[in-house]
Length: 297
Image (cartoon, rainbow, N blue to C red):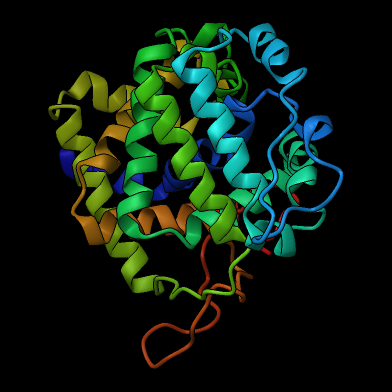
């Protein structure tokens, strides 16, 4: 039974990595609903003369988003905004600089391209922190019926920074800052080979079986959804997403990061690749790992 499930999971692994790509690339829109753009300074920031966002309407705006004026979370958000505004790499390398970020966050294609590029250039340790954070947010803030939604992107868009704990909000913004800076970097990354990817996905299949305690009923339910995702109920979506993310989190470090890299990079991610004898420039990663209508900058 377990072997049959593992083989079935291998045939249906597009959903597994696709779900990770979706959750990771959604982060900006899922938690940042605040429109900071109109409150940024007109003059671009520079190292010699750091800029601060205008606070006149910022406190009111935060209050409208459920973040109390003068609260620890408000302090965290304002400090993060100042850091982003004054980062010279973001100003130079992201088109439009910090002032353009609000528009990028609201544009699905641009947001996913930026997030994919930045996430792929993080360290494996930071990618794990990102995965752990979103798994925790899904577990703690999303009901078992996924708000009655079958679209996981719509589900994650229900989560706001106001709902997060101060600690989670601070960690989220720290990671998002690293993603923004990394997305503007020229750093290249080795992409996994097809053999490495296949081995990692086999490990993931085994971890899913373990996560489900090899229970035949749950294995059948998981297999049914991977085979017929269109028939999944909101509860099925939440359940399988949680199972998959917990299984990925428990994988060995090397295999786990291969799965995450495959989920957030694209078959034509040449700007990330560093060709050598073992890691070719073009790796035939599955097309479903790519956010729709986007490429990695």
